[in-house]
Amino acid sequence: MSVLAVDLEIQRDAFTLRVAHDFALDGISAVFGASGAGKSTLLRALAGLERDLRGRVAFDTEVWQDSARGVHRAAHRRGVGYVFQDARLLPFLDVAGNLRYAARRAPAARPGPQFEQVVTAFDLAPLLGRDVTRLSGGERQRVAIARALLTRPRLLLMDEPLSANDIRRKAELLPYVRGLPARFGVPVLYVSHALDEVAYLADHVLVLEAGRSVAAGPASDVLERLDLGSAADWYEAGTVLSGRVVEQDERFQLTRVAVGAHRVAVPRVAAARGDNLRLRVRARDVALAVESPRGISIRNVLAGTVIDIVEDPASAYAEALVDIGEGHLRSRLTRAAVAELGLAPGATVYALVRSVTVDAPFAEPAAAPS
Amino acid sequence: MAAWPDLGALWITLRLAGVTTALLLVVGTPIAWWLAFSRARWRPLAEAVVALPLVLPPTVLGFYLLLLFNPDAPLGHLWLDLTGDTLTFSFAGLVAASMLYSLPFMVQPLQAAFATMGRAPLDAGATLGAGPLDAFFTIAVPMAARGYLTAAVLSFAHTVGEFGVVLMIGGNIPGRTRVMSIAIYEHVETIDYAAAHLSSAMLLAFSFAVLVLVYAVNRRQALRVV
Image 1: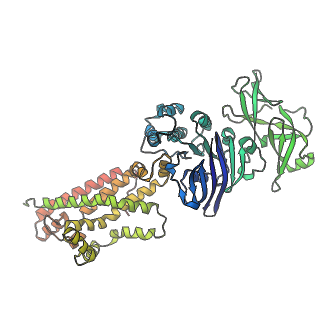
Image 2: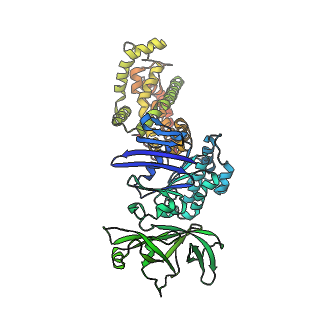
Image 3: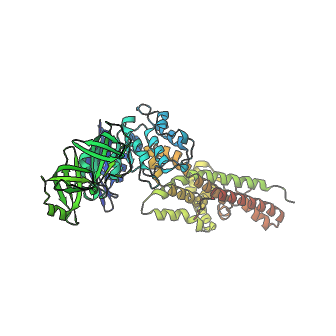
């Protein structure tokens, strides 16, 4: 496994990006943060596309940037692939021409996928003769990812590849991205402001906020932290649970999933018994009760213990982190409720889960049965 | 009826315009590139210098060049030492003067094309393994192809039409510096209207054809000269 050691400072007008982090290049690492947090600038700097920066970037023992010694390895000599937000296909070449442009310049000595292999993997055969201006948003990004792979990259950098307006169905593309490390043996550094993408894709996460890294670590740990503040999309914030399908309920069209000792019912998904699923539960969809509730419509009630509560003094809200034995849940509730229920770390609570999103394959959020 | 003595003038005219355009493509490209991408504070100054021949009376430009090309001046003297020929009243001098005179017609369309393209495609090229020179020829040139066509055609046509500068530093030496526009002037002076008609009609047809070509190519892209 390679390591990308980064210690950078970039000054742009009133904005300063300051990141010191060793990226373990294994699977998919996400750089997550709100717009303007400096994610794209960081990625461009790693690719060698930004000038005027201070600090050091090293890929294993290979130094790409060391401002103290005046080292700057040019972008075309770094051996990284880059997928831009706007694809940036070369407009005067057709799809095949764009792919060949990359393949022709790839160092023959470096291992990497063959032309036909990539064309097959991204279902590009029907598009090869197509003018790139006549591709849909999703097709454009598939070509862009395929083209980047044909450079035989040692690291693939992806800058919000799914955020273009005309990509209506992210779901088509996410499985392609998720399969990249396993299928092509290339680690991915993925920049996004969308929590759902990061939760679905990432093995490791670095969170940027206003040019600083505020959290880093395994995705499951980072995404359930309460103190990410404005970096996390307030609406989408939540936690990820792993579960196993135990039953398909034909009568009520439900799939029952075991999460540790708990049973969670979700609207039926196409999966076989024993399949592993990723369940995403948003903080806003979790309510807390201090007694086992009876006579309510919510089916998914999970007992647990409060391990942390963070109140936002500027608003009416607080968030609680609840240990349910096999993973954690976040719950967004009012500060008034925290006070009235006497919630504190250590308290036993019942988490009422209104809605669960199943990532298999990346599905639209569906309301749990009420 | 006029014989065809103007064929010599026509040949010099086309040769002058061709050589000038070819050299301007080489010289104008880096200038246009720098103007399109530089953030230097004195860039407006450089832009003004490049645009100067657009507003300067050709006789003024010709007058200063005459002083500069004179064998007694350092530049003119150096050229005489190097080539054994003078810059004034010679074809080489005409090429040098025409390059200055037509410079904005080469640089401005190219600058506009490079600026429209922007850095984004070049960044993409770099991440695809293309070094700067590779990216220039395989990305920038194809993307600025219309700009190149416009620039080349305008520079060529503008050089064909020049009069004042040629008269100042080239004179009217048949087979050496006598170009079409000068020949027409002389025909009129000597009241040989038939020859003037023929030459003028040729230039008119040529100029019109050139502009039709440029506008046809630029149908979807506004022609930018100044």
